[in-house]
Amino acid sequence: AQSVTQPDIHITVSEGASLELRCNYSYGATPYLFWYVQSPGQGLQLLLKYFSGDTLVQGIKGFEAEFKRSQSSFNLRKPSVHWSDAAEYFCAVTRSNDYKLSFGAGTTVTVRA
Amino acid sequence: GAGVSQSPSNKVTEKGKDVELRCDPISGHTALYWYRQRLGQGLEFLIYFQGNSAPDKSGLPSDRFSAERTGESVSTLTIQRTQQEDSAVYLCASSLGQALNQPQHFGDGTRLSIL
Image (cartoon, rainbow over all chains, first blue to last red; front, side, top):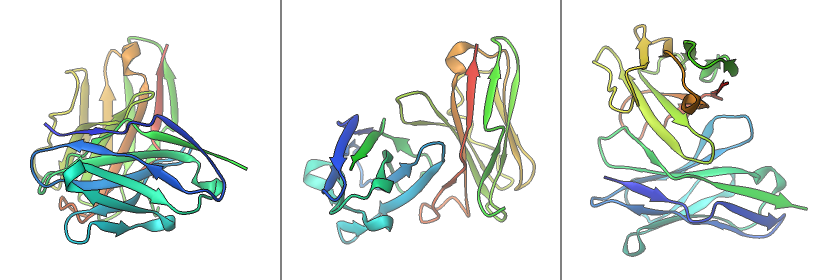
């Protein structure tokens, strides 16, 4: 079975500072990896995804993530956080030809002025 | 509309009552998913519809849960004899197809509270 761990439940970061959210997965085959963001009272929005190829993927809103097979990680980063980035972030994993996504428990990001 | 629409946005009901949640997917999206999000947890897959194929119900937690979809349009998730542990946000998503390069677009969810 596949599983996703997001070690940080809550992160507080100053506006303009960098942000890194951790995601570790447990899966035997090559995973397909996703990051979603959920703003308060809204549904999930896809930030970026990794299927194959370049291990550094760029997403929307200035986010990027790096797939590291040796560490079973897919950490999300943003160089300079904006107040509007305050939200909950979910990492998800699946395998090829499987539509079922397994989600982590999420990391809540608070941005302070 | 342009996105996935879910109704109601909030539902409060007494334990033991039946509830029905509705999802209107994006027009043209053949795949539709239901997820449950309990407080402080990630999303749990419940059920998946793809076109006219038999739905994948493997994620439904008990026989009190059922879902239907009319063709490639509206879906309803029904929970019978609700229990307090059913309290959660129920999210619906749709995509153009099953392939993973077709991202899932999520609705804003229905927040269900069982008293």
